[in-house]
Image (cartoon, rainbow, N blue to C red; front, side, top):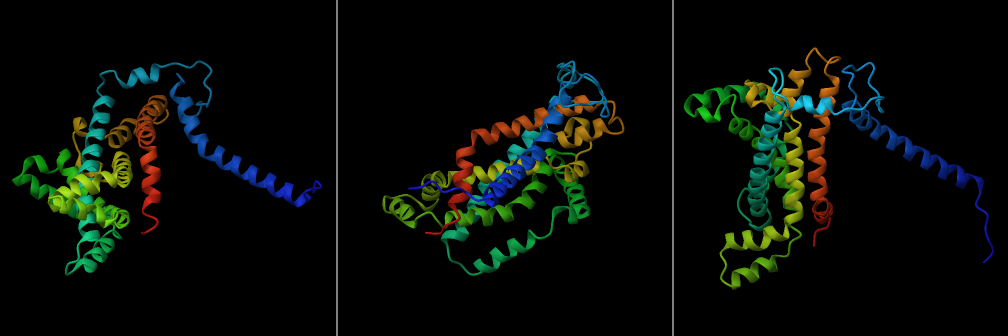
Length: 290
C-alpha cells in the first residue's frame, strides 16, 4: 500500500487538541502544585509564596502538630475522619436497605416514594439551616449528646441530606443484579435478610464503595453546617478549624495553612487509591440494565 500523506489540516487539528489537553492539565495541576510548594516554604506570606521554594523546610508541618492555643490540627483531623467515616458508613447501610427495597419489592406508594425522595433532594440543606439549628437546640434539651455542639447531632444532619440521592444511585445498580442469586439462596433456606446481607451486598460492593467515597468526601470538606452546629474548639472539623485559624492572618499563616491542606488532601488520595478498582466498576456497573 502506498504511503498516503496526511493533509495539513490533520496536523493542525492534532496540534490544537494536544495543546488544549496540556493547557487543561496545567490549569488543573497548578493550584495543587502551588499549595504543595508553599507548604515547604519557610516564608509565611502569600505574596512571596512560590511553587519551588528556595529553602524548603518541614517547619510548617511541624508547626501543625505542636500544642498551641490557636490551632489543634490533630484533633480537628481526627474529628473530621470520625464524623465523615461514621456518616459514610451509616449512610451506605441505610441507602442499601432503601435501594434494595425499591429495587426488589413492589408495594403501594413505591413510585410516589421514589419521586418524593428525588424531589426532596432538589432543596439543599442550607435552605433549612435555621430549622436545623432550632431542631438540634430543642433535641439537645431532651438528649444532650444529640444536640448542638455534638458530633452525633452533626452526623444526624448529614445523614438526612445524603440518603435520598444515594438511594437512587444504588437502586440503579441493584436493578442489574440477577434475582436468581437471591432465589437460589431462598431455596437453600436463607431468610430474605440473609440473602440480602450475604448474597446481594457482596455483589454490590463496587457501588457501596462509590457511595462511601462520595459521602465521605462531601462531609470531609463541608463547612457551612459544621460551623453552624459546632462551637467548641475541641469539636471543630478540619474545614471549620482551619478557617478560624487562618482568619485575618491569611498572609502570616499561609505556609501552615498550605501544609494542613496537603495533609488533608493526602487522606482523600489514599482512599481513592485503595478503592479505585471498586469505584470504576461501581460507576459503570449501573449504566446498563440487564
